[in-house]
Length: 137
Image 1 (cartoon, rainbow, N blue to C red):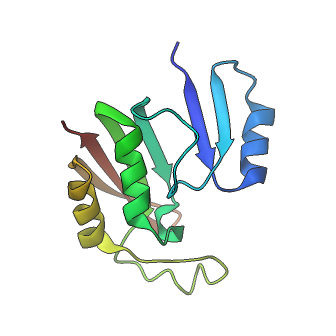
Image 2: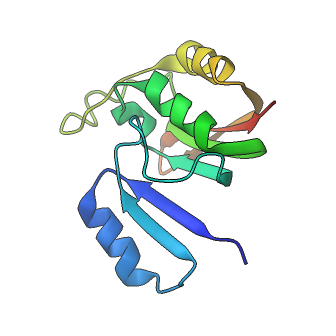
Image 3: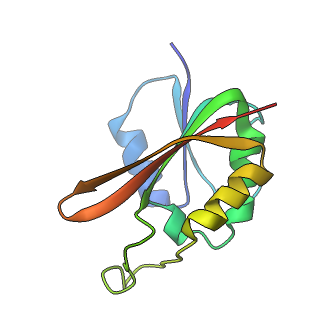
């Protein structure tokens, strides 16, 4: 059985994850994903990011951490709001930064990742994209 590690900036979310999951091989850490993490580098075979990229100001730091902590041939899956949606009004109470596919693609390439697939889907009239990347040597 593999070890699972969860990182989130929000203490309450980490506490809820800890309360719900009693598996001894699962660890949860409060940290800023754009800064140096208290986790060994090259430790992850899989990294998942769901609906959070629009809140990150320093996406260069974010993608650098993803790359630094992912093993060669590791998989990174991110789910984002579809870049062509104008969500600033709907998410007016949240930070919303539209990085766009061009900027995401640039950061992926800069960090020795390649995009394997991009899938669009819709749920409850909101469009999303799932972007699957792989770490290369």
